[in-house]
Amino acid sequence: VSSRSCQKIRGAQIRELLDSKQSVLFDCDGVIWNGEKAVAGATDVVRLLKKRGKNVFFVTNNCTRPREKYVQKFSRLGFADVAQEDIFSSAYCSALYLRDVVKVRGKVFAIGGDGVHSELRDACVSFVEGDADDSGMSIVDCPLEPDVKAVLVGYDDRLTFLKLAKACCYLQNAECHFLATDPDPWHPLRQGRVTPGSGSLTAALETATGRKATVIGKPSRFMFECIASQFGVDPARSLMVGDRLETDILFGANCGMETLLTLTGVSTLQEAQGYVDSDAPDKKDLVPDYVVDSIADLLPLLEE
Ligand code: PLP
Ligand code: CA
Image: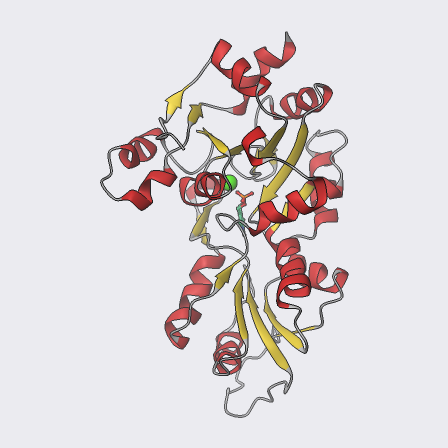
């Protein structure tokens, strides 16, 4: 792969790029929408790409909802015809990984919310969850499941100390698998507020156990493998569009796709350019091939 250039592109360069691709993979938050608001122009971009016969997929590290809830969200925000099959979330892919790769026998101890639990249920992976209300209970007195063969950690806004403590106990068994839905450190919310991401919860357990979790979501290749196994996409003819260098852009690079950074989300052009000049070889994969201010910049080329 030639060295990535972090080029701001427009007009004919965007047209050439789109013409060369058969599939477009979109990150969701920061690219397609910000929270409950669609990014301006995004609904038209998705509609017109599909009209041109492109495959459009959505890859999100947000594990809080099952895919059917994303279908509802797409429709609520004005995206027509986004099917559940086109949506690859870290919760869904974690469930597939446990079922098809780990082939877990026994139970999964799942830290997470409805998204994680529903996807595990749909994949017929049996699991136990920590009690949401365990106040006052000590890890010494609380019963542990005898048959836990994997711990899966995802975003959990009802995380408790006891859930972490139970996970530590299960992970003492070296044969118990340790998985994380995604490595995201934090997320922007409204009004300048932020929330810690799944990666921060996983880090607590990594410190406590001295083990490293296997990450399923971006930047790991597994999400692309899920798409490729269901749709037969060619990375050389696929474009990854994202707003976060450490997850989306690295994911694209890890999977052999060209990458497009949009500036409507977390990462800035300055950060991206900072990596161009970096001496560390492992930082080069954080440099996007192309940059646009917003996916709305694709619109004029698609409307022609
Ligand atoms: N995880 C959680 C809990 C989030 O709230 C978000 C974004 O809002 C994400 C992950 C990142 O999602 P995406 O990969 O679509 O940017
Ligand atoms: Ca994002």
